[in-house]
Length: 67
Image (tube, rainbow, N blue to C red; front, side, top):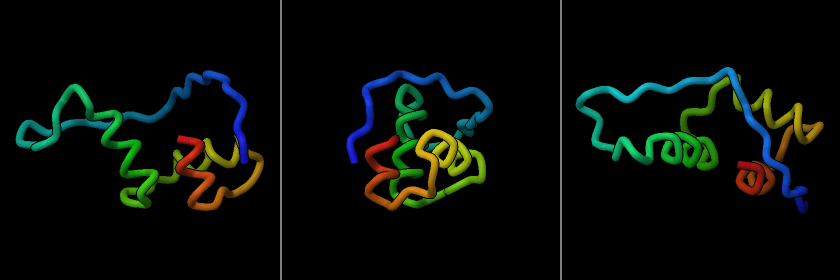
């Protein structure tokens, strides 16, 4: 599956970094998205975005390419 090179701003989700978190604060969003791609920490918001943009429930490979 080849996705068109379009930029989309998604508004409606937030994530928070706790003071004792080990992750680098400058890469926190990338860390959260990578967890999503890896199938860890999957929330309801993210699958809704995938289904809306792709028009279907994506396979693991499509999910990785999408994000």
